[in-house]
Structures are given as structure tokens and as C-alpha cells.
Image (cartoon, rainbow, N blue to C red; front, side, top):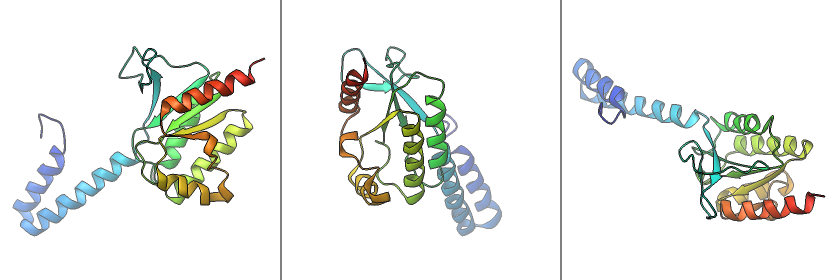
Length: 186
């Protein structure tokens, strides 16, 4: 565990708890520590900016792939963990921060890490959409799972669930955004 740098502190604490308090308490403390570590990892808002690899349909994290080229007019972002009540506000604040001070006219958010949204995630997303609308920034959603689509369509009369702004892939959302920008340009 030390070599791969994963869960070594939880294992050490569990082993010490077993030695001091017995097997049952040691196992229960290991479970509790594992759950706390999971919530801690999921609650940390990490949002990757994606860029296009050459002329391909592949959009990857520009921090990991320096050859990926971001579009100056289209900001493509992907939360690195599922969006839920503990991290939703942080994730959408990180998206706002990445968009501020740029010439971005379109934001594409890839939700491939999320299988469902709770009410807090929907509230935060609706707030982001309202702010982006006021800033005249178009918002597209890529890789939106069925449960999220259904929740968006039931939320606030379906304002979030515009099917023209939801695609199955980042490449499709990027193509739609480019077409929209072409129409907006003089």
C-alpha cells in the first residue's frame, strides 16, 4: 500500500485498532475510515479542461496531454468525479472560475463521471445556467446519462433539459457549438 500510495493510513489505523480494541472494533473503524476517505475524495472539486487531439474526435485533459489543443471560443470541461450534494457547489464554482476572464462564448460540460444528479446538483446546475445566460455564454452538456436527462426534464419545468444542448459525445457537442458560433459571427 505504501508503494502504490493508496489507503495505507486506513490500513495502518485498522491494524492498530484491531491490536488495541479487538477484531470487531478494528473492522468497524476500518469501514468508517474508508467511508470518510471516499466522501473526502468525492467532495474535492476537480474539473479538467479538455482539448482536442489533432483532427480526431478525442477530447482529453490538457493537463495530462499537452498536445491537446483547447479552443479559445469553446471551453470544454469535465468534473473528475460524480456530481452530488457534497461537491456540486464546488464543481460549478470551479466551472465559473475557469470561464471568467476568458473570451469563451460556449461551455461544454461532460458529465461522463456522473450517473445521476440529486436535487443539490440540479439546483447548482440551474444556477450556473442562469448565470451563463446572463453572460451570453451558451451551455452544452455532453455524455449525459438517462437518469440525469430525466431529472433535468422534471426540474423547473424542463428548462435545463433542452435536447438541442445535450449530446452523447463531446465531439458532437463541439460540432454543435461550432455551428452555433458560425451563426453568431458577423
